[in-house]
Image (cartoon, rainbow, N blue to C red; front, side, top):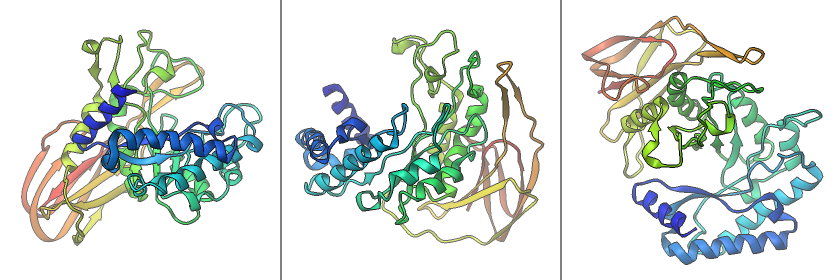
Length: 370
């Protein structure tokens, strides 16, 4: 535990904060029990970090997937609500934690014979808005485009967060075990590298507050057949860190995050007049601005890149014919394009132009304008 605490401090010094689970489902057997558990956790946080706690923790979260493991709603709903109420009320009493956002619990996708649905389970959970700053969902796209099931889960969860809280998606991702023979859908690492930045942008497009890719490290699995061991951004063939190597999706996300790094005080961005043409129904775009005044037009297509056949345990790359997207600016500006899934630096520098085109297929393309 001490190593973890010091690790959190090192992350905070690098600008990375942690969202902390505050208990398990059974900790909420009664509200009194939940308060005891939460206060023990808060004692640990305040005792170690003191007034710096809000700089270490991005959120205090309810229990993880309480509807999992075949537990009936008649049991897990009360436990989950007790724990969330205790997190809210007890953390607000302490000045060191009063301003750390409280994030609601995320429910699992019900599976198995006779299972409920995510819609029914969020309905059973009931209104969590009195005890949360943010809603929470877990959405895995089945190996498909990162948008898969995202709107469905957000709609289902809105029943439990009716006051309009923005969502955290605290789990989502892909696994790379291509020798897997079960009932899920892996993707190759190169496909994951193209999906990873798009995964973030699908969340941004929906105004979700945070997205957590599951997960950072693989577990050792030399057979490359275990689903749960191969979600990581880093390969871990053994427990020896010297054997670890980064996957293409790690590099893609490093490029993506580096491109958009803009730390500092909040500011109000200004728009940029433009017209985009040439995109079909799957065309997506988001415009952002940095403090420098430069705009970044993020463009991608909501398309699947790989198809896994469960019966034969084999996969096929899906061809994506590039579309020519034309961007017309009201005033000529310098334009540089990036493809973070492919390389860190610019793909092309187009000079000062009023109109430019990009070839858009399966990966995110970013045009720096200005």
